[in-house]
Length: 237
Image (cartoon, rainbow, N blue to C red; front, side, top):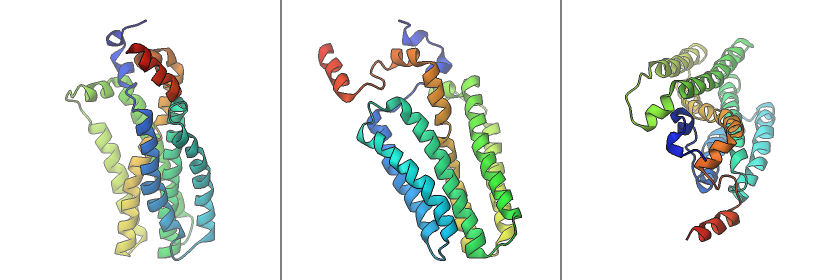
């Protein structure tokens, strides 16, 4: 067995996992605050749009049903949690996109396909960008340096985030003269920065799958049912 301290530091930095109980709490908190409260309420709010409701409720229902698996047994399903949470990040970002577009077309009264296409491109660029940055951070040792609290140059990350935020501000002011709606669009778009980051868990899932033997060395109980973990703990006492 390879000693943990002798592992590649970049690989080890990517294998810093939360406990299954924390994974469960993440689902409950993020679903309630980001997906249900911030996502569903604006969609079903007045003026109501059946088209936007259906476009949002189907993926929300599907990801919520899938979430039950990890709320019931986060231990046995620890590995696939990362795939699930990454897809949740995409779904929540998509719902935020629908919230923004609803505000534009239903609340503000914007017409034409151009605003839809521009915001769609912005959200797609956000999802693609954070995943590219995630791989770059892993390969460049950024995660390892962050965990060791070393100084590093994060200008490329700041430029990307700033570009997205400025883009949201510019488009909001071009297509809306309603201060409240503009503020809501920008706030929801900022929350999308967080949910889009969750999509990087898809890469982490495949990374775990590819390096499962290393994962087992760092976390011998990884993906084992809680009963087996408790039995192992008793044997070590």
